[in-house]
Length: 126
Image 1: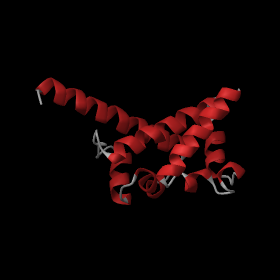
Image 2: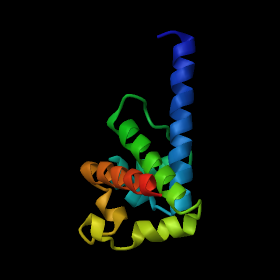
Image 3: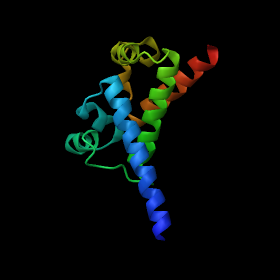
């Protein structure tokens, strides 16, 4: 891989990692919950939140991270950018998620994908 390709991959990794950190902070997602959502340990999640770890491109965690950011963007759009309301939605039982809280539902890959699709569908109604 050329130096330019390595630099671009590094930049993409940095951008997605920072987007995950920002979404996590805005939604007040703990490092334990974030690790469960993205599929890595709590210590790794903590390093990510402290910007001492970057998500590796072409990995499962990369794909899950992209979906997590997608979930945040869709949810933020629905609540008019009100992060407190978005956090409340994420932590409140919801009939669309079998009366589970979305934060627990998205700890499974199929739950994260379903939540993204659900929010996208809700946005299309608005």
